[in-house]
Image (cartoon, rainbow, N blue to C red):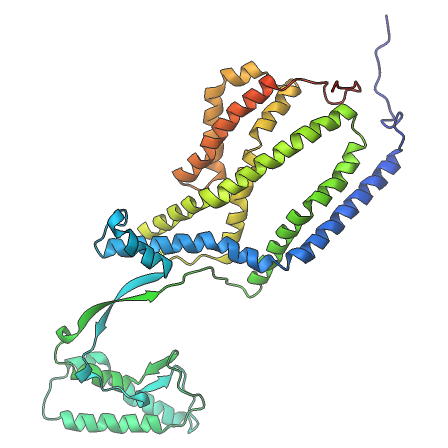
Length: 407
């Protein structure tokens, strides 16, 4: 009886390279790959700002559409009615939102340029004068002014108000009046409200204003880190051919000829499926996901202030999940080639496979039905493609065999 074969202690006995030489070759390949990645990073930083602006486009579009639908609904229009499409397009294109204002009639407009002061008014005459002025103005509030009856003392109170106003305006200031960040003197505001005989005089008006809600950052270094991350991603994509070349040159040296042909066949298919998943996620699914999330926040009456870091990570992870999930046919073919599953098992278990696909899609996508179906339905078709590949692609020699595959 023949003696059972024992595993060899030296795995590199029949190799032309020693173990140390293999390690040196791996180190050289990794160093070259890192050098190409660094070069790609330097080049990618030149386009990083454009990439960040580009990934913001779906969010800005979704916010504008959401604002237009919400405003049309509040005005009594049906956003889904085709007759309202031109109005919706006008609001969404110009990022316009409507708001109600109450217009004070011109005959009651008593404010002048002296009534406007900066938000913070530095006083040079000392803290005593400042407190005296603030004390005089704090006693005259809009509530007290509206509750005080009109009588013959109006002229006396008006004279006192003018005296307080002149005292406040006499205080020199260091900063010029900024109408964008200024305020109105409380005395002047109280006098304006006091002159109104009835609040019913105020007429409500609807006005349109631009609301360019976008990404915000809570840390000073956050935009810089996002810029570097975007540059790294762009650099990795641009340098990926040379990075894969150096890694593949190391792996290919340990493969047989027929094993290399497997890689030459399956690698382009893998890249194509990954790219298809990324394109579908970014240009189709992302818009539906953002629309769902914005509508859900609107139903809870939650203010929308997207943060830069969270949004960029979300935009990167969603296409990545789609790209990895789209590798399903190659995974099925690999499991069938190593003998773990047979083609008949894939066919007979299609119901269970569809259930697993929907569960995986629910985990990899946000909590909305649209994105889940957007991933699950293509994966069901890819599952059928995997069955066809397992059935019709000829089976060659197994991995690790030293036999030569026929052409």
